[in-house]
Image 1 (cartoon, rainbow, N blue to C red):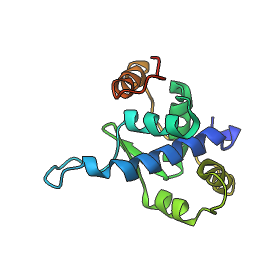
Image 2: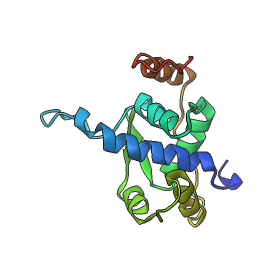
Image 3: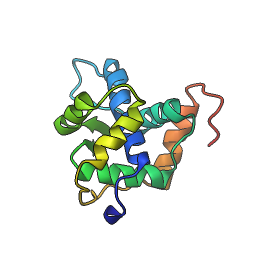
Image 4: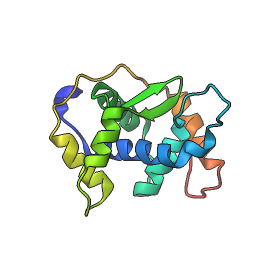
Length: 142
């Protein structure tokens, strides 16, 4: 997979993770020991918001593998987080065009990492879609 190069879907998923994390911080209680981050349903929701389509399981899995391998995001215990390196790339992106396009351009300038080991089970992807659908978006069809 890694030899294929960066894909626009990598940028799409990265932007969805970044934006969902920014929008999801209110969900973390100051008294909880749960780490900051967002769940897969939040990432799917933001991805849908960005492109009006939900990414498929394989698309998410492959993007997350490249993004974790590049140390731009982490996924632990189902929580998606932006790393310091990912936050720096996000802050340093050029503005003026769409976020996905600018991140994709930034990714193309980075060396392609070895893929991370993350996998997304079909059942977990389906459950996240159902969770997202339960939030009231009529366009989502699991």
